[in-house]
Image 1 (spheres, rainbow, N blue to C red):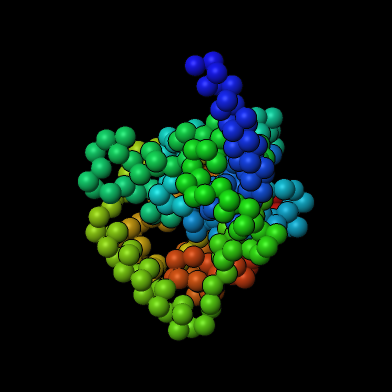
Image 2 (cartoon, rainbow, N blue to C red):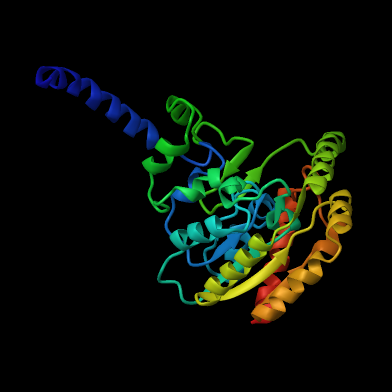
Length: 303
């Protein structure tokens, strides 16, 4: 056995070295989540699902508010409001934070649950990297790559951002930049698919009391660290029609939560026609800049 270990040790060392080198090239092209776990812990943070990840741009907030932000929004499957997201937030946020600014984006889908789900272990975020990651501020983050990168590690090198940014690129500050064809015909095709998806989801899901409680727990936690702003990001007219039919009192619900928590609620859901969308559900990046500027102006006005 000893002889065998001596013989295989050089091969093991060589493989480990190769993987370590390949992993060092991981960046915003690697996948849609890696950079959330490979930057320093922030003191100002954005939470939510994919509407927030694409629609709230930390760089705009930095320019207007003179402080760095991190967008810690993933998507409705991996970062809906719940105990897993709260646990991840506590690991992500700089523990020394005292005067942070926190933008908590909310839509009905991030606070809903499929009617068929009865047990906590069946919540979709149980399979999220937020559920099993411990290290959030190391680059390269080999914990993430070993647990959640399922492709060949040579792809990390051959598809690195230095060669060219992918159409979905996760910036170091957590903003998910999407570059797609914005010709009206292409947008219409994507929107049709997204509308059909949410029409089906509306039949399957209801607002979850567990998620609503978790949202309030998250707000309570963040209030001890700074100032919280609750924000509702719009979708396109057709998406908002689905939301308003299924959840007609959702904005009132958020307003009541904000009043109870003594925080400001910024509701953009009635201004859906002011913005462009890549697929009906997500803001086009130029519209994201516009919305983010409005959020920043509201924060400055509140001060």
